[in-house]
Length: 313
Image 1 (cartoon, rainbow, N blue to C red):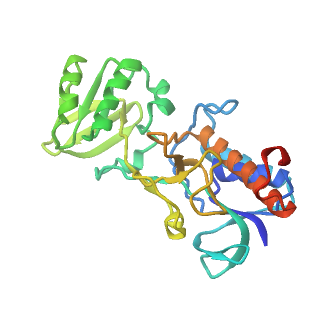
Image 2: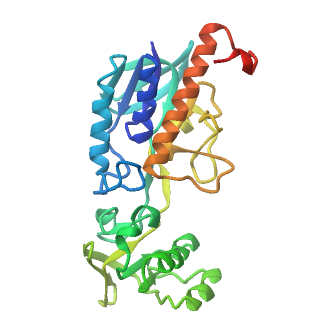
């Protein structure tokens, strides 16, 4: 019986395991090794690791876990989780099962890029989702913003304000949403409504090829893709989901299912309009989940469930 099984080996999952291991909890991390930011060569806004490779960060995190003998890391896929006596039974692909008293779901999200040839292959490498994560590196570049939903189109106003005076919106065959028409015009941002057949090139030398054969040359592209949950485990467990598909958690990273915590891109507070999907906030979520999970285990073992705040550590 593990104290906790962490599903997901990104920054949230690894940091949850690190905090739990330091409290001498018996921990199993199951990682499918399919991180959302796998295509990206750099990550940013992580103090002391700005510009670090996401792959290298995961490697360093795994290496650090090896210092804690109570923490195990298993590469694999979790296929099922079912409630069991005093906890949960976790089934891995291939039939292996393990039991845990508590769970941390840190399975992340998947970006659903538009069906444009070459777009997904360049996502994170020349095609960027977030101007907080990549805007500074694209300063002064000629930029295209690809998309037709209001949040996608409005992103053009943001990058034009902060990073470039040459921004073009490409709506891929769709009209511009009415609230954005006047704002784009006032900002002097052109709109191209032709359907995009494919994207070619690499960062610094990119080409959007339209179905009519015309070509728009840009140095980088922004595309705010919608997302979905990487795993259906939270839904299968009966965790409450928010309208955007994120798992609803409270300020302690607890889901609506007792004993199940969620961290990173997987989850957010209902009061927040959107999830902050930064590497550093994911790691912080993992630490927060592990701290409060540990306190819950301590109170259960010490018979302090229902105790006053002054009686708790």
